[in-house]
Length: 337
Image (cartoon, rainbow, N blue to C red; front, side, top):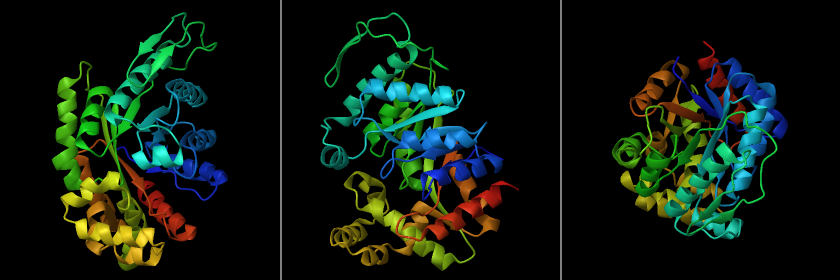
């Protein structure tokens, strides 16, 4: 079976062990931790305790809320803990999230992430060596004189994947990263018409070999014989992301501008029931895979024409956690065959 990843959606930290262990037994290529209500690094570190072979990644860790050095050190620690199985997935996050939730300046995200990753690669490869490092950029001015990490790394070259929605960020990803991570609302058409061309533009600029570059995207999946309930359960997840202006482009591509307004109005009125009602069935089928077990892999296969690694995520916002488990177990059943 082709490589497939899984987002770790757990109700408790303890549940991450069982979830990641089940994913490894089912033959998944990788498990991935998100960052909103929990920290991505802590989750993936905890999940690693119950696995031996499966790769572990962050999808994604917020870059600008951490210094490049602390991100590098965390990546090095987890890579050592997992015997070289770690993939560092980074994202800039939304402007509002950075400035209002975290109180950090956002700036020009493409320029800033390029500086960030350049510094990050240096720290990962050389922080254990006797090398003074000075960096003078628009966003980062650093001098590591007197600093030498006391431990040799598991690897001096950890893969760095970058998330992006807009064409400029996706182009930068093709230029500077080892892989691309598409957001939950990256539809098939958005991948085909926007993401792949922008990545190719970045590849053209890059001076490094992109032969091993991984094109990934997160896909919300609800496997069930009860299609109506599955579509309803997905609406909360798609609807929540529809409230974020940063993620507007894929929705606008498919003509959902009016629906976005209704969803946002409901959200900011704290009317979650109305938010869910405002998500049309068509929007769910655009941005998610809802299917019975028999036809799921066939629907997933379509995405493999464009990407190397689909990362599956079950619906998890505004639904009971027992339903989250049900959708996860359906995936384990399919991939264990």
